[in-house]
Image (cartoon, rainbow, N blue to C red; front, side, top):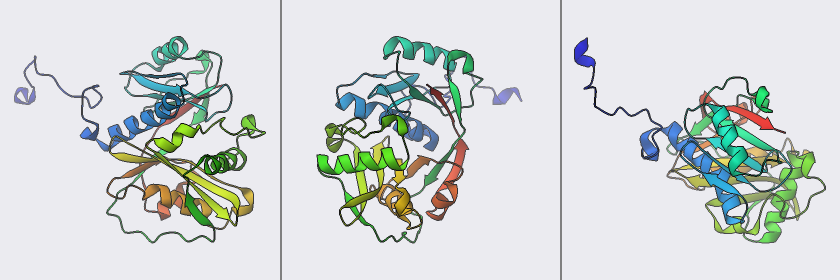
Length: 266
């Protein structure tokens, strides 16, 4: 049995060293891609952001649960991350705290538990019948399209804290020149569904899928998810699903990997 033990001075990778390649594991790629999604929009918009070894975060505004994100990048004590967030980023705004690991109770630090969403993955070689919707799906190329996408995510998700909708409160114009690609589904000129693909660390993160109530039952969410999923066809796609949304993603041949933990600092 002693022969299985490495030399005492040998460095043993845990999978979470800062200098480890993203592709060391698919979960590591998903963590780093979500960290990129947290920071990239804020950095491009000139808003507060931070990206260190243990966590990354970006703050776009002073209200709304999806406006500000913090993603833990290493399995460290989340209380240490929360304290660093308070030092590095504005301390008077709400944010979502995303941990790829189970956490202890963080209510004593002023956070409330959102849940344990499953991380799901779809591999590019998987054969899938694309969903069909009667909406016209358009890739956003201008600020008018961004405003349509913003309205759908705020009213369709919904995000009442961001209502009434003010253009630019969630999607800055710099999002058009970034690793993120936005889609909107239209009925005529009426925007009814949206989704985003953010590409980083060799994977596509599918984010901000939302459908207006009048478009539900028309496969709009599935079709917009599909557009984002397949935008980088050679790479896997990952997303954090709700339990209610899992069947839709399963039909698109996503598979659950593990559950993450999300807290909200109100």
